[in-house]
Image 1 (cartoon, rainbow, N blue to C red):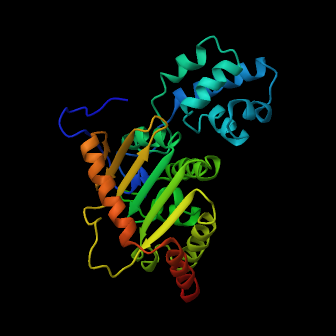
Image 2: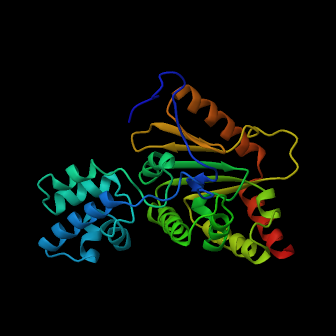
Length: 299
């Protein structure tokens, strides 16, 4: 991992169109899903070595410390292989360096905008991930109905195959919440995201139920920023912060036509300061869940 590519503020940006995660909203023209021959080729290599070892996907899964459906997704070329998977698969399958070598040439991830993939890769190994959103529900928390509504509303319009690829990519990312119980996830969401009723009443009811269920997991903290708040540290926009296993912190921010990866410690420190202040400004964990339940009953 290198620091700033421009040698100035420690931020790397690339053109793209709105909606976080390539990430959380959807992607527009110029950010549609790429085909992924390199991912499919890597998956075939893994499958060949697995079969040579006489292992099923279910048998390989505990040996590489990933779920069987994750192994299946990697072999199908649908999921970018985390570094830990590559290293353990190389050793378990006696890959002669072939898996490590093939992984170095992976450059595409279907359903994710090119300018988000660096962050999405770090997500798979993060020990801490904090997100503040004021525009839409973050991709990691979205229901299928909510996500598809965002995809359908994209301009320029997306094709059905693009919409499907984006949902598959988002669904794969969401498995991190349950597959990585030792990762601490924190979310601060604006109350207005629910009051807007994106997708209609039924979509929002399902979304609230989904968030209440996720909030029961010990590694997920969810806070709501009330609609009326005289002091607000997040007025400059959404924030994502991430801590790696090596205890390095990075940030990610998005605008209408850009995604910005932030590695400069000074800039990351500023974002951490703002996020920490917002945690004190938002409702407590208990009050946040209580508000969601009240909105669920009033909707």
